[in-house]
Amino acid sequence: MENLETLIAAYLKNCETIKKLDRKTLKAYRIDLSQFNTFMHKYPDFTNKLYLSEYISSLHQRFQPKTAKRKIAAIKAFYHYLMFEEKISINPFDKINIKFREPVTLPRTIPEPIIETFISTMYKQRSLATTNYQSNSILRDITLVELLFATGVRISELCTLTPQQVDLSSYKIIIYGKGSKERMIQISNDDVRKILLEYYTAFKSDITSSGWFFINRLHQRYSEQSVREMIVKYLDIAGIDTHITPHMFRHSFATLLLEADVDIRYIQKMLGHSSIKTTEIYTNVSMSKQNNILTTKHPRNFMKLE
Image 1 (cartoon, rainbow, N blue to C red):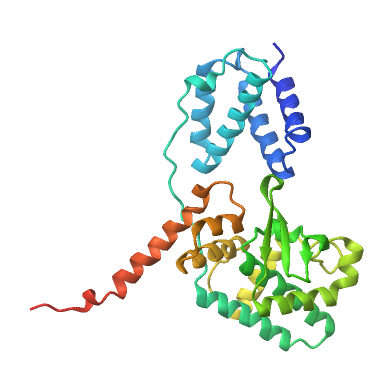
Image 2 (cartoon, rainbow, N blue to C red):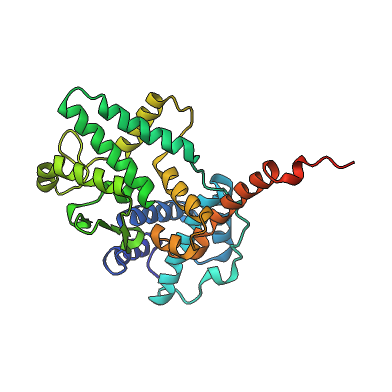
């Protein structure tokens, strides 16, 4: 039998060339399987159920449930590959119970009034700009935030947009999500359409020459970290004492649509979730809001019965 390191290398090559997994997934697989390989150095047989169970136990001790679950899934996929390629005759995962109760962590959303204050502050800052450079920089920042909230896209999807993905005649954006899955999102709000077109007009030469839709001051792709820092800057200017991340705009997008009675399957499609179960996490957030409304607003709470 080939050694574990050789088999892992072959599997990762398969993931890259045959399965064509995206760069981030490949990076995670490399890390997870490298850690597994290091652990198994002290054991003679990587197909032994007891050794594998010991490693899975160590993952639960060292990592948060969500991270441990991901790492276990990576190893399980690797053993499935070994069985398919007939590198092993027995899959030890068939005899290991890997199910565990994962605590539900509700997505953190941004209250609607705070979103309104935040975006209004950005527009006000632009009106106060004293140079064309300042005005255009704020224009880019506004466009980024407006699109985050208007579309619910991941920050990585937004920062890697190319001009070919943005159709300004129909105001549709093509998104390449996890696993290179493609989805199309319509920009319907007139204000967002206006700012998007204004941004493109101002940065057209840079966009064309760089090949990226969002450009930094060095005429290169605007990074995810730059967006995070930009949000912190405007939070400070607006005097908002709330920690906000780019991903919270995505959570808010989904939750507010759900509370507006939009069918969850439409939300699933717009978010690019493969499974409806992933989207259903937002129903828990919506139920939390419902509980708060019924506790504070229901007239029965104000009745004083004799």
